[in-house]
Amino acid sequence: MKTIEVGLGARAYPIRIADGLLDRAGEHLAPLARAGRLVVVTDARVAEAQLPRLIAGLGDVAVEPIVLPAGEGTKSWAMLAELTDRLLALGVERSDHVVALGGGVIGDLVGFAASILKRGCRFVQVPTTLLAQVDSSVGGKTAINTAAGKNLVGAFHQPALVLIDPTVLDTLPVREVRAGYAEVVKYGLIDDPAFFDWCEANGAALIAGEPAARTHAIAVSVAAKARVVAADERETSGTRALLNLGHTFGHALEADTGFSDRLLHGEAVACGMALAFRFSAAQGLCPADDAARVSAHLEAAGLPATLAAAGVTGDGAALVAHMAHDKKMEGGKLPFLLTHGIGRTYLARDVDLGAVTAFLDAEQAG
Image (cartoon, rainbow, N blue to C red; front, top):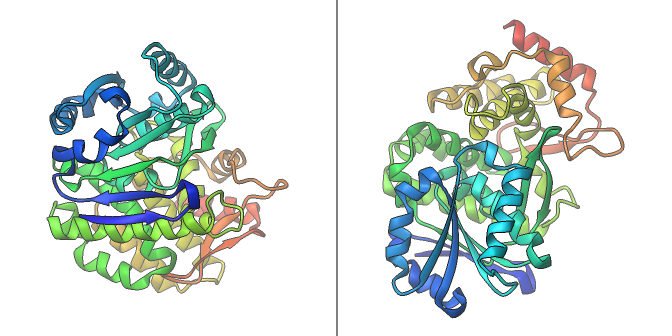
């Protein structure tokens, strides 16, 4: 078992990674079960695929399951209200640990509910998608979506523990695996060009489920995120902002497609990273060959690298209007993650949105 610590002083917590971890979950979760009981929140798909396995792995721990609808629509005010009401009805106390069994939607929703329930209770992340395993389950960002945009209402609330069992990915649709792989590639593009080289050589094996490739990618990604979170937990110094590579463009693409299964989050991030590299190249900041290399690898992995491939129809003005609702807006300006090349991402605070609009119109024109 690999253990990676998120170093946050009194709020530090371990991330444990091992094949079969779900089958021996009791070893790790029983000590957190008050009076021998845990509330497990999941969605309908994961409940069918993984909940029985988790319950068996918990042994003598009594499980109170809460099963919510699957899909991005569950990250809503209505589901937040339903979840908190059900947790209160089950008598959850501040000392309890609520278990989030699922992908990023369940992790974000449960984490936010835990942050506000009785002014804060504990929770555990048991991520069941590659995207959640390498990104959203680590770092304490929790949120719901609103009509104005994605993740605009939420809180920083760190989990007490993250349990990652790569074998749960065996039941994941390949489209979901590819979407998660976008976040793996991201870590190479930010500041680790050698890891991007590894992705080019091993990404196909990872997506196909090769155990060693899968575990290596998860461990490298989690360690990278843990280092960044420990250095800049609340995104105040700009260091943690680097993890948003592709997300400013990506969230606008998600808004254009209605935050739906038409474009999964990881697919939007993939396209967003390709756009960030091409925009940087168009501005003379990044070698065009690096931008082409990034797009080629994402496309080879089965991910969208163009607006057309992502099914996005909005013009530049419409997409930039979506960006104006981004939670990272500061003084009317939107910071962008741009790049000087693979492994050389940086935060730009002086980007001309008119140039972004023109660039996106050119992208739509093909």
